[in-house]
Length: 65
Image 1 (cartoon, rainbow, N blue to C red):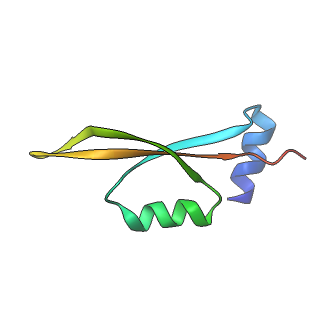
Image 2 (image 1 turned 45 degrees about the horizontal axis):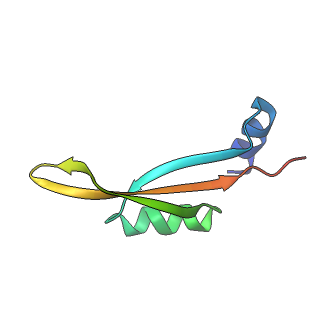
């Protein structure tokens, strides 16, 4: 992750964002361990088969050198 943060910092953005399905607890915990924080939920935004799923927005600030 550190290498990716360095690349992102050199490319110009100051934050990285992602989304994860709310029921994917292991991915959510992984992203939290990497410094991402949950910022919001988009209710029933994804459809998987016949089931609607919530989507969690996560982001982290990129450390500046």
